[in-house]
Image 1 (cartoon, helix red, strand yellow):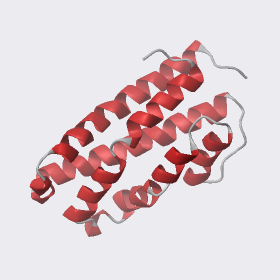
Image 2 (cartoon, rainbow, N blue to C red):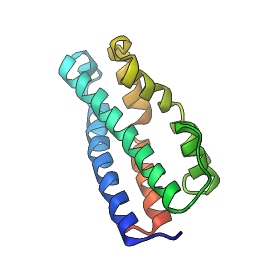
Image 3 (cartoon, rainbow, N blue to C red):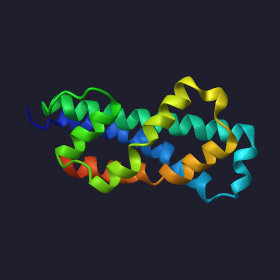
Length: 144
């Protein structure tokens, strides 16, 4: 297969959604660290992280399917396929792959996520979403 305009449009829409969450996370990250003690801000950050992670995996799935790359076995493998195909850098992959444990906690073990867990995740991962969007756009030839 090859990159189609339809693929580009679908991917771009998801990337825009992801970047909206990423922008919020970057704002929160640069705010007073006590933001995580506010239940509403923490919950908003949790949701933004969750949706942004889902956007990463949704885009990865679209790209892998459309370009007939090897079938991944799980979320980490999905990102590994993008690494192997030189869509993302090793540095990005190494920094981002651990977020998949956080995804599992956000989805299944949310009751045990504390303010410091969320604040730490925002600090560690917020900037990686923008880098992902740049890599995907570059690979697919999508104008920002």
